[in-house]
Image: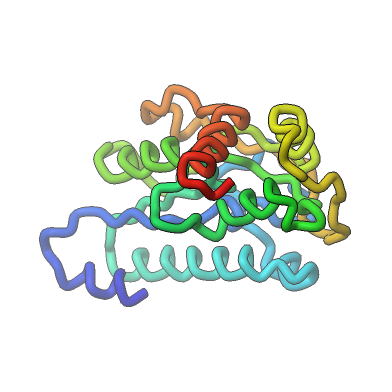
Length: 216
């Protein structure tokens, strides 16, 4: 909110792009029947509280407050809603998201998440942010996500492609995060994002990056 308040004071700012998350969209009891989920859908905060999904709760509340603020103050806001971001390590250390993959690959995670989620390559996230900032047609929310899969499908792919790594084949028992669903990405594609990199491509880029940096 402090950033948005500062933007009000700068006449040179024409548009604000906020990074939210698909976690502000997909957590609801009816996510399967409503699929494909689109930008009009919101996560149910009561559902998030019931299943202790506090990241999703925080993302949902923060984005709603941002929309309330810009509506009251007349700012042009475009929100990018990425799913689980995968790709090469771009910083000195892996992000919290990539760290989960690294721990899984090294066998330091006893189990993988009981989660059905969309995945997206970092390059596609960057491209979507550029469209959100530069394309005058961009408005509202933009879902940025490739295929939706359960983590068991990802683990099966990784264990097949990288058999030398001790990847756990055990799924945790957390509930509330495994509802089958799909995401509608037509809006961002209409702005010019032709296609998303596949799950295989993004995980290959990620793991090769780990290897090159000596993390694996």
